[in-house]
Length: 327
Ligand code: NDP
Picture: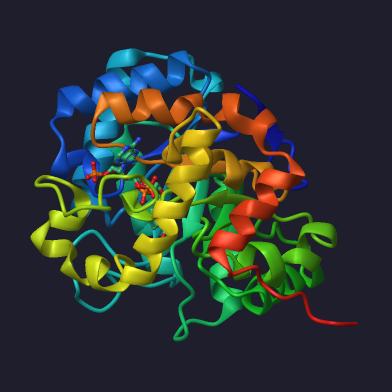
């Protein structure tokens, strides 16, 4: 396993990490979740990602029971939660980034995950209804109280992240150190262009999500939609509509061919492609089966084969290289 610094923070994070969206407390059994977490940890993963909204709190409960059972030294892993969407309740104050919800979401996550503190606590989305001052102060206080160690954002724009930074700096508070954006071969702009300056200035780390675009960057959807896969799930019809397009499937065919020529598989190639970007601190893997995790964890072995020539071939297939603004 390779470890990278999370932005300018002192934290070292495994370049491959493991998350629980859709799977824990929902699509997969608890024993499968346990076996996969143990496999990941035994292979050097030190970051497990979660959120209040995943299976409406159940994902954190499942992960908490596993952490408690495994009894791993607390200093050997990082665990996160994210607040914004709530854990099911939709009454006023049960969602969003107010001080009240951030405190309550943090306490609920600590209880469910059965830990004394969260290593990372994210604002899962920006909240247009709450002033940035309130959110930054709330996160700062949670850090001072020892309930969280670092805080970050997810799917915030560069401008929103910088607003939080500037407010924190002006008031000698602790600002966000990390952003959690989507990043994969189909979704590149934010990580490759929008955040480019702030990696350098404030030293932003990135914990990127959906490195396989929810499983589309595999060969399994080329012919049909296999039963039991994410694109087959009734409550994720919106995701299928948005992501499983004919244009993408055409690209997947070409990418699959490149992977075969490199004697590897498309998931390994797609994950290696993400972490080849040095601005990616970690790629959060997702898996519904142990075989998937085993395969994906081998992605680092592909890194050496991603020569300039191979990267160029991939660009020719993708045709989506983001344009950097001309200065
Ligand atoms: P991926 O894009 O890697 O998708 C994972 C899914 O793809 C698996 O559950 C499985 O689904 C399928 N898959 C994975 N590996 C293989 C393989 N080798 N062969 C075939 N199919 C495979 O990641 P996720 O979308 O799961 O995101 C990872 C994590 O990122 C989440 O768990 C969460 O922690 C975080 N996240 C954060 C978000 C945010 O807003 N901050 C949003 C989304 C995710 P199946 O078998 O069911 O088809």
